[in-house]
Amino acid sequence: MDIYEIMKFRRSVRSYKSEPVEEGKLRRILEAALSAPSAANRQPIHFVVIKDEKIRHQLKTAYNATWFYTAPVVICVCSIPEKGWKRSDGKNYADIDATIAMDHLVLAATSEGLATCWVAAFKVSDVKSILNLPPGMEPLALTPLGYSLDYPEPTHRKTLEEIVQII
Image 1 (spheres, rainbow, N blue to C red):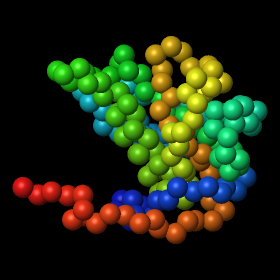
Image 2 (image 1 turned 90 degrees about the vertical axis):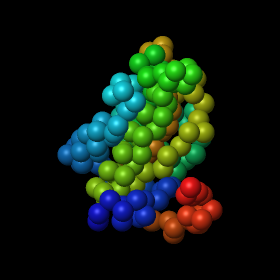
Image 3 (image 1 turned 45 degrees about the vertical axis):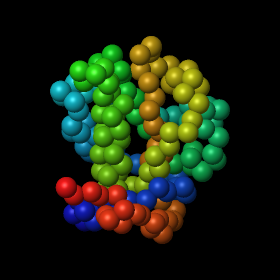
Image 4 (image 1 turned 60 degrees about the vertical axis):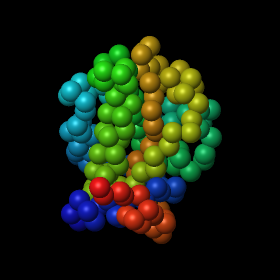
């Protein structure tokens, strides 16, 4: 698939096989995420790859969705605001940079035949505690990573006319 096909094919998957993710695929996915652009090339990001079943089970206190933990891997994408570039009005780009890296990760996973589901609706304090994140490191998103049991149908997307203004 080319990049456009990957973008259109990607779905938020909520059912996973227990089959392990090959180390080579995981490494390529993480390398793709690290290739994401960041403001002023600050790269204020950190990834925690959770393979340990016990730790994945503990994360249920932060996000209690059974399907989420059926995948063999969970990845936490973190931003580090103190390392982020700040615009002249004070806006910090660390979260945006981490979001771009997460998008690269999700698209690379799709390219490798793996499935993901971007989740941000978790208890931040629980994730920080369970993953023992240092002060200043903010968990931005979690995603399961694994082989899909089934692939959801495409969801409705707005038309270009609804979201694009050309002036």
